[in-house]
Structure formats: structure tokens, C-alpha cells
Image 1 (cartoon, rainbow, N blue to C red):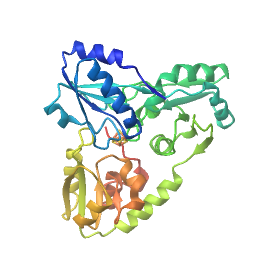
Image 2 (image 1 turned 90 degrees about the horizontal axis):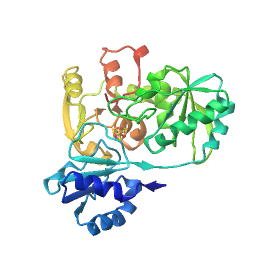
Image 3 (image 1 turned 135 degrees about the vertical axis):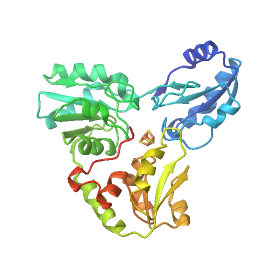
Image 4 (image 1 turned 180 degrees about the vertical axis):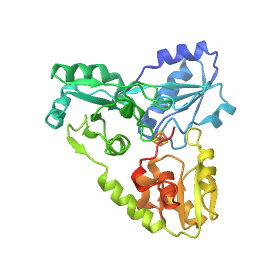
Length: 315
Ligand code: SF4
């Protein structure tokens, strides 16, 4: 696991004429912040470090720009245009031969190949490996939030959908992305964790069953909070307004951190989440009341059919 050295960054900052620099790291990389801040101070920059939690490029510490010329966000690719932010990649290598473990699960001659941002630099090597085994890869460009070929996010599966493949190989950790890909594409999805070497076929059925149970609990709720995030890359006010218009008891709630205590204090009988789409799917067990996705709320309001159920993505 490594971050790029700071020499390119220093050059980049000098080109921009930056003197005061803010740094933001996601949770898994925060331990590297002190050393990187020290090397930038050595190079003559005034440095401010964002200490708030951060889980993605959707949550930029733009408030630091009141005091800094530039914000350097480590570990993620951009999800929107931010002229005063430099995105510093974080690359995690693995042995390409681990793809051997996925081969027994692959049935097609052509697979869609997708991964997360920390492994996208290995896409060409993964493609070569699969080709050497007689498997062609369809690797598609992503969308606005996923600027790198073959990249997917937990809120954007464009590169998987655009691959057009009936079978998709997701290389990365965790099961949320491959389950999301299965629901977004209806393709057969194989997930390979390149760090543990475990491979498996993944389906969205179990998640769908859990979500239908949550929807049943939400049916007839007397008060509905439509959550809108204040985070830079999660705000979906237009969507929230449209959803709020579907029910006379729905009220838009603007908030930064969506956590169980805040939802309990607000006291709504049900919430609809337009913030990070993973919140409703991953964290429902932590929440005191049902938290629906926008599409689930539309189904309960009768403006979307059950057959049109899909996973929520941020455009
Ligand atoms: S909205 Fe959620 S899934 Fe999308 S980039 Fe942000 S943290 Fe990741």
C-alpha cells in the first residue's frame, strides 16, 4: 500500500502558486497525514490538516479553503469539478496471478472488468492476464463520478453497465460493490477479493429481500423525513424536492452526518435517503426506523413499479 511521493505534488502546488495548503485524508490513510504534512512544511508551505471523518471524494473539506489556497484530497478520484482541489491517487498493488482464483467461476469468453479506484492502475495488467487465459475483457469508461476506465463507486456503476457484458468480474474488497453491480446490470457477477484471494458468484437477492422487509415496515408511516446531505458531492436537492412532492407528510431534512442518534432525535417515522446511497443499504440495522432509498419510496408512493426496483446511484 502506498501513496505517491510528495515531489510531484510539490511541483503541482508550486505551479498553482499555492502557499497555504489544506490536506484531507480518508479514514484508512489518516496515519500518513503527519509525515506528508511535515514534508510539505519542509518544502515551504503552510499546512492545515482536516481532522474530520472522510469516506470519499463526495465529502471534500471545502471549508478549509477559507484559510488555504488549495485543498489536497488524498485517496480518491474526483466525483465533480473542483478547481481548487488537487486529487492525489492512492494505489494498492496485488499479485495479478490472484485472478487465477476467479477463472473457475467465469463461464463467458468475454467479461466486463471493473474495480475500485485503488486498483484501477492494474486494469491493463489484469486485462493481459485474462487474455492469456483466453478471456476477452470489456472495459468501459465510467461516468461523471468515475472518471477512470473500469472504475466503479458504491454510488456509481456506470462502467459496469456500459461494459455491456453478460458476465462481470469485480476485483476489490467487500461485497457491496458487486451486489450493486448485480442489481444495476442484471448480469452474472463474480467478485474477487485480490487481498484474500477469495472468489465467489454474487447476487442481489438477499439484499432485495431485506429491502422489501424494510419497505413493508415503512408502509403507512405518518411522518417522512427526506434526507439531503450537505456534503459537497452528495447533495441531491432536486431529487429530494421531487420526492417530497409525492407525500403531504414528507419534509426535507438538510443534514451533514446521517447517524442513528440524529434520526432518533428528529423523530420521523421513516426517512428517505438521498445522501450517500450506501447508507440505507449498509446501515439499516443501526437506524431506529426504516430508511428507504429514493426508488423504494417511489414504489411505496405508487409512482414506480416493483419490476422497476433498482439500486440507487448518484448521477
Ligand atoms: S456517496 Fe458514498 S459511495 Fe459515493 S463516493 Fe461518497 S462515500 Fe462513496
